[in-house]
Length: 416
Image (cartoon, rainbow, N blue to C red; front, side, top):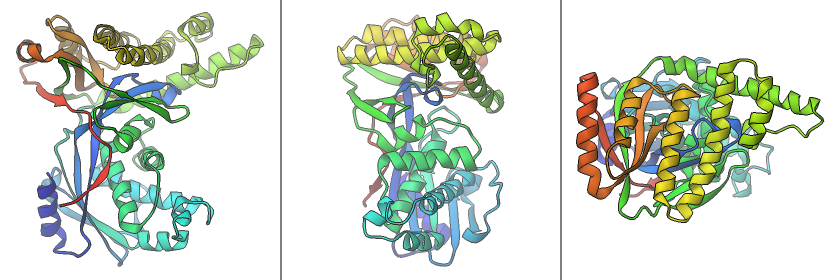
């Protein structure tokens, strides 16, 4: 992939001095789904699959973008001073949005207080260099639309590379936040922080047990013994997801506001977020949520947050049976309460549950298509793939695709 990106760069932009190479991984989330924007905990790990990029700075105020995976490698050229307010819905919006988000961050920080300034580079100089533009060519082995956060990987890749090119020092946490803002503000997707955080902060052979309300995390070793993480790509993505994701988030926000008002009415200290509630507290207070659908969405967030905590404890004591049961319970909740599954994902998970040697299986990602994540004994891998792929082909007439997930380090510069 790196060589593919390098060749595309040369074909698109010519041989340029100062070309540097970067990588940002996708992620799989093991537990805690749709909890990140509800102030809860999540447990992602970065993957060894991701996006590779060749980058070089410019000084003429233009941005050149090319992708080996979209539009036959066609190169696009934009002027930094004339970017449209609406960046559209193509892959270039994520790259341009990342440039804009980094620019905004520098402009919003008072001089002398930014990390860039503390490292000896004045904000004005950093902004001037950034406004000169850059060329970027990318290639990916991360499947798009599979719920493995290809958009977050692209954002984190771009911000990481621009910081490297222009001497802008940001912590990994701030790279994640800058990348999330690119998606929220410029790609207009109201995502939480998990995807970008995992891509920026991944640690090899570990999961990140992340508190999204504070961005504090614990690196938990993924010591799976005779088991491994297997991703199954359904190869479908239902268009419903683009409209239902914002709706689910809105339902959770409205439920949180109702519970907060109910606690104030009762003279109790109001909960900061949905996921600061225990299941017992939620059950006591949820009668104030009159819409049954919204109540189910909120119930999922609260209980999946607890499943994430219990999952971290299970991993620490090496109890894969308990960990797998929590993963499968999460799928049931995502299917029945949060209602972001689909027939294809249900079949993949439910078939996996009945294969000997499978500890657990569930949907991972936003939903309405994409992948399931399963914990499978290595000795059962071939049986698992045979049973799941056969059932899937019989039901839907298409083949699913399997990936072994290898927990990886986060975004970084590559040297060749």
